[in-house]
Length: 340
Image (cartoon, rainbow, N blue to C red; front, side, top):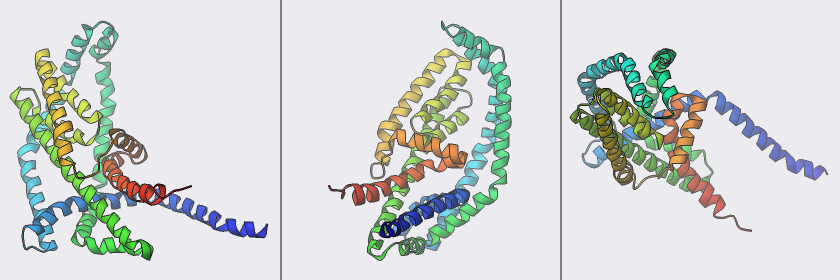
């Protein structure tokens, strides 16, 4: 009896330790979120840094400085060229919103069974309901401004991590048992390769969707082509429902002009969506982790419910890393070796 009680104490202490670690992680979730965001930014910076080091005699500090300067210059040029027009288009969208709702109500009124929905849109109740939403968006912008210190801290941590990734990787490896350190080193390398490949591929895919959508909508003379293209590019990072939701804005804006133009926009978006989903993204992500749309969507919903907008933004990079760890540790080290 005494022997069984002694044997059970390690399990009890281990369970208590896990619970305490879970509580501590939850209390420090925003610190961990900033740290993981810094890791993602560091990997994003490391991709061009390594490419520059392979093609030039520059050392890592010089290559990192050159990449940061290039990104700052690119952001300044893009902001100078596109930001004034983008702000103007957002203001135009706000002015067009009543006319847009009336136009949609007129189209829906011609469809049998949707007359009640059309009356609700035409009455202006939807427009009045959107006012609290706009107030929430302003509050969100204010909260984002208040968290500028966290963003700066994340950027600083990313620079420090990218400046000396080997030392930080060795710090993690030293925290593992001696017999597992070689495998830990390989795991870190695989996670970095998967995350870097996914970031590079999705960034190129999103930029391509933005430029092609912008060019196509401008060619069709759709109102607010720049704003619509930017929304379509950003929602490329949202799996499954993102491209479909992104199509609603340019289609609705084209509907203000004519139903024929709206049909052309739908055809354009279908062509671009299929090109991105079946050609561009598989080609860019051929050597990295293949995320299932259901897993990616559920991760964004879960982390969004727990952590809000930052959780949504970091959900997919987190799943990329988690999928590598599950495949290498849980599947190969545990499940594949489990025999009866």
